[in-house]
Amino acid sequence: MESATSSSVGAVVRVVARRARYGAEPLVVLLVLAVLRHFGLAGHAPFWVFVVLLVAGSVLQQPEIQRRLAGGADGGRLWFRVGLRIALNTTLIYAIGWGAVLAVAHLHLLSWFVRQAGSRAWRPVAVCSATAIAIGEVAVAAGLFNYLPQPEVHGVAALVTVGTVTTSYVLGEAVRQREEAEAALRRSEELFRAVVQDGSDIITLTDADGRIVYVSPTAERITGHPPDALLGDGLWAHIHPDDQPGAVEFNARIHRHPEIEHAMEMRIRHADGLWHWHEFVVRNLIAHQGVRAIVGHHRDINDRRAAQDRIAYAATHDALTGLLNSTSLLLALDQTLADGASGGYPVGVLFLDLDGFKQVNDVRGHAAGDRVLQTISAVVRGACRERDAVGRMGGDEFAVVLNGVAHTEQAASIAGAIIDGIDAAQPTDPGVPRVGCSIGIALAEPGTSDASSLLRQADAAMYTSKRQGRNGYAVYAMTATAP
Image 1 (cartoon, rainbow, N blue to C red):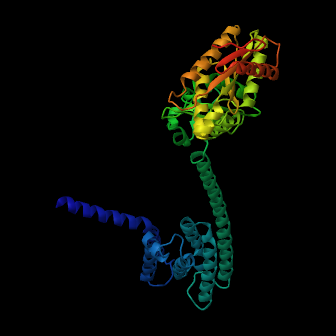
Image 2 (cartoon, rainbow, N blue to C red):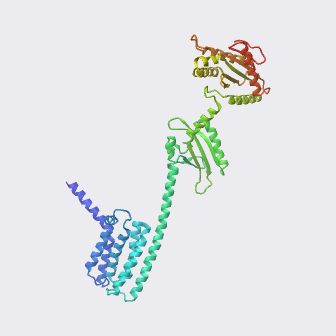
Image 3 (spheres, rainbow, N blue to C red):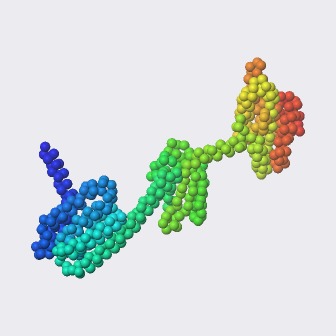
């Protein structure tokens, strides 16, 4: 019970204190008027008139009353609220008897409304103030008591009006410029937030010592790592080991050439443990007075890289078997011959043609024929070495570029393994067609042949082998043998 009573008393005290805070000025004015009235300097109106006007002013200053008068909208019904306060204020100052002189109090109302409604408050205050002073001077001319003599009082009123209006304009313009500057700053902050915090790029700032001092919040959305975890050397710890030497060189290039923008693609470990390709675009702005940092933008381009890899793969590989296509195999042979010439080792080519493949298509259909080609492609790839290049030349023809062979017997051994593997992969069901393989072998000593010539030689050797029967191989310019 006592706790509830204490709480109620506290609430009442807070309400009274709040009312006093927003209504203290009129009460101070009332005290001053009481002193002036004692010395006969506050007009002849009954004192209760001053009390009523000041209490009304105190009530009007309360935030709740202003919200109601504004219709619940911020800055609403501004002309009405300004006019009401100016009318009340003007009535008081003319009742005091100093009329136009005390009309400078309208500037106090100007500052009050500017705080409430901003720069647009100056026009209502200027217009209402000038109108109220004019009405007051008419009342003085009609006989309202005034301490100042006529017609001098009207000159004072004119000067006070000009001063009030011009001061209202100057203050209003100053506040308007401040509002525009604040609005521009807010737009800039919103733009910064949209670009830096909500954009598709991670933005980093790196100091002259190479330590990352800022990482934008987008880092967590893109990499899964919180920005704080990437500060200092944190980001470097997530670079793929194979890309770190390139990253070191990239960083050195940024410092050597601060006048240009630098770009690089490298892999970053995502929080889920997977490696994602990122594109880094970096500019060295350490010398820039307003930046003093290396500014980096990087984004996840994993999908783009995957699409590029798929396109590149499709352009260089056979769609059915996954082996190199004929164009890519010729390029690989060119490169292998060039490497062999510089390295001093011989290069070999195996040219393969399937025996009896047409019967598979005729009896079992093209879908079955495609499956046979895929099976044979896997056999050929498995029988060759990692460094060899295997390709499908078209139809049922394949070729292998042997990247370095010690002698003819080594090439023949690989050819025999291919033939045995193909034979073992054939179905044994009665009535199911089986395919064989004829292989031509051609070898070139370092610098003695070009790709087209070596391939023609292997092709000629293949026909030599085919004339000898299926499942055989022949070396160019030599008689075919059976394995």
